Amino acid sequence: MSGLLKSSIGKKIAMALSAFFLMFFLLQHFAINILSIINPDTFNEVSHFMGTNPLVQFVLQPVLIFGVVFHFVMGFVLEYKNYRSRSVSYAKNNGNANSSWMSRNMIYSGFAILAFVALHFIDFWFPELNTKYIVGDMSGLHNGEFRYYHELVEKFHNPIRVGAYVIAFIFLALHLLHGFNSAFQSVGANNKYTKSLKSFGTAYATLIPLGFIVIALFHYFNHTH
Amino acid sequence: MNLTLQIWRQENAKAEGKIVEYPIQDISPDMSFLEMLDVLNRQLITMGDTPVAFDHDCREGICGSCSLYINGEAHGPDRLVTTCQLHMRKFKDGDTIFIEPFRANAFPVIKDLIVDRSAFDRVQHAGGFISVNTSGNTQDGNSIPISKHDADEAMDAATCIGCGACVATCKNSSAMLFVGAKVSQYALLPQGQIEATDRVQNMVAQMDLEGFGNCTNTGACEVECPKGISLENIARMNRELIKASLKS
Image 1: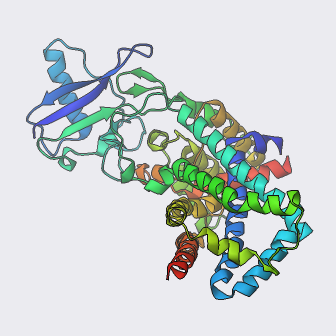
Image 2: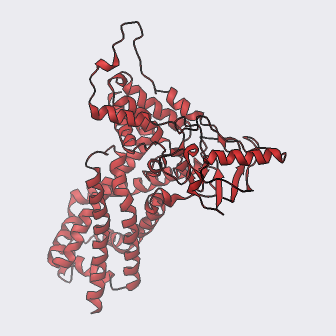
Image 3: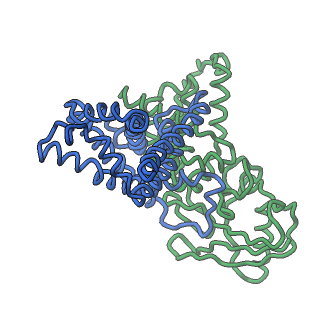
C-alpha cells in the first residue's frame, strides 16, 4: 500500500476521495439551508441538532475540517509539482482546442472557493464557536426563540455580502463542472455509466450552487421588500 | 500558399533557444507539413544556413517519430493524425504558423524541434512486457479464448505509437495516457496476467521518477492523441494500481 500512497496516482485518488466527501457535505448543507426558505421552524430545529449533537460536533466536524484542509493543501502541492514539470512554456498554446476552461483552471476556482470559505467562517462558524464554547451558551436561544434563522437572515441584509456569495457560488459551479466527473475518473470509474454520470454531474454542479444563490437572494429580497 | 513560420531554433541541449521567423513562398496545399519543412530546409541549405532539425521516419502516421507543437496543438490543428499526415490545406494563405518542440522537462530538447523521448522507453522497460514460454511447448495464442470486447479494447490501447503528444499537450506534462495504454493492453489479455501486479506498480514508479506531471483529467491528451487513445485507459491503470497495491 505504501507504493500507492507515494505515487502520483495515489495522490490523485486521495484528492478524489476528499472531493467525494466534500460534495456529499455540500449536498447535506444545501438540504439544510433550503429549509430556511421552506420552513424556518424546521431550519431552526435541524440547525440546533447539527450545532449541538456530539457526533456532528466532535466527529463529523473535525473530519470535515480535515477534508477541506487536505483537499486544498494536496491540490496546491499537485499544482506546484505539475507547474514544475514544464520549465519552458509554449510561445503559442491553444488550450481551448482540446479542454475546458474549468478543467485547466481548477486552482483559480479553488482559490476563489477558499476565500469564500474564509468569509463564511468569519460570518457563521467563528461566531457560532464563540457563542457555544467560549461564552458557553449551548441553548441555541435568543430572547426565548431559536436564534439560527434570525442570524442567517440578518447576514443577507448586506448587498455586498450577497454579491460576494453569488460570485463565490459561480466559482463553485465552475469547480464542480470539472471536479465532479474528474473525481470518478480518478478512482477508476470510467465505464458504460460514465455518459449518464456526466449529465448527473453537470446537473449537480449547476443546481446546487444555483440553489445556494437562490437562498441568498431570497433572504436579501425578502428583507428589502 | 505564402506563409510566415515562427520556428523554435536551439543549437543543442544546453544552448538558449529562441523563436526565429522564416517567410516561405509557393507552398502547395497538397504538401504534407513535413514536406513543407523539407522545402524550407532546402532554402536554408541553399542560403548557407543550418537546416531546421526535426524528427521523422515512416511519414505514414504509424511510427510515432514525428512530433511538433503546431500553432498551439500537438501534431497541429487536425484530429487523429500525426504531423506527417497533416496537410498544408489545413492552413490558409498568409497564415503565421508557430512550430515548437514538444515541451516537458521529461522530454529535453536535443536540437531545434527534436526532443529526447527516451523517458517513454524507460517506462516501457519497467514493465511493458510479458513472459512467454519459448521452450517449444508454447501454447498458440489463438487457442486462448478472449472475449471480443476485451480483444478490441486491448487492440485499441495497443495502437498507441508512443509519440508523446499526450505529454506535450497536457498542461501538467503528464504521461498517464501513454502509461495507461501500455498497462491496459496487457491488463486486458490473459498473457498479461503473470506480471500484472508488478507491471503497473513499476511502470507508474518509473513514470513518476522521470518527472512527468500528474493527471488532472482535463482530457486534452485524448483529443490530441493521433491514435484516439481513450481516457478509459487511465481509469483502468488507476484500478490496476489500486488492485496491485492491495495485493502486494
